[in-house]
Image (tube, rainbow, N blue to C red; front, side, top):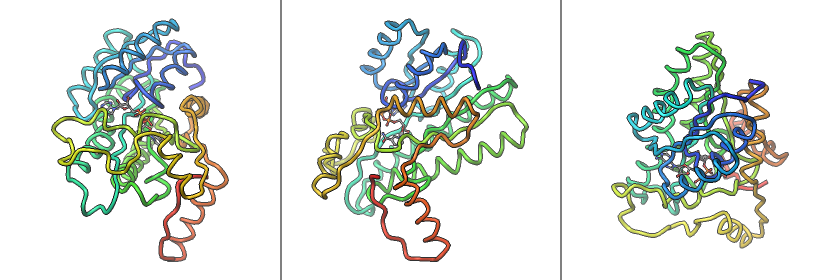
Length: 293
Ligand SMILES: NC(=O)c1ccc[n+]([C@@H]2O[C@H](COP(=O)([O-])OP(=O)(O)OC[C@H]3O[C@@H](n4cnc5c(N)ncnc54)[C@H](O)[C@@H]3O)[C@@H](O)[C@H]2O)c1
């Protein structure tokens, strides 16, 4: 898709972080924006900020764990703007894991899988039939993570498992759309190349009441990118970070080329991916890769 002017972009989890940057980047390129999110304060903020820039947008409450909620988001898009040409299944949370997975609360697994996996499945089930029926050039973009899709960092098993599933779903969606000879393109967005400065490490702010931890508190001790930097420094590692605007710019550049992989890596990350492939081919016992690089 070379020209975003006049296109309608739906972004789930669009009120913060990567989704927010996508909203502005697309809006500045002339797209009309529909943001769905559950964080009311952040929604109000982006609503005003988009309007202040003169970007045509609608911000609506949308919980991706609910098909009905996504259907009403789709209706907001069609009622205000007609069809949809860009869908970003982007909403996601970090489960804030720490310690041994056999001690995790069942609610930690449920919350993360509900948002990260079911959120993507629900978004596909609501928006793909609409995009396929429109039979015009469109993009369905799923935000995954290198942690799960490409590598297995050892400190966030629930998140990693969710993103492994998300990648399998995204790649299959691409194959199916291709087989259907549809003009709809599927892309896998990997925020990076470094840890991205977003609210992901403070996802507890939007954790639903029914899935609250039995024992309160963020067990991992990390609730911001700053905390991550501090913890990395304790191990002598200087953690580099990426601004979400860079992720949005990378994503749009890839979409212009109809690319499947919206993926920016560093030489260090490439080496980790290569080492992982070698490890599998050589049947070497896994050793944990570290975040960073
Ligand atoms: N930050 C990183 O380093 C990084 C790295 C790889 C992948 N990602 C992925 O990027 C995506 C965006 O996350 P981010 O880093 O911008 O974090 P973020 O917390 O800044 O943004 C995520 C947004 O999703 C919303 N959200 C949470 N639960 C929701 C629900 N049930 N329904 C609708 N919206 C919901 C939040 O309110 C928030 O606005 C996620 O899928 C995340 O896994 C982030």
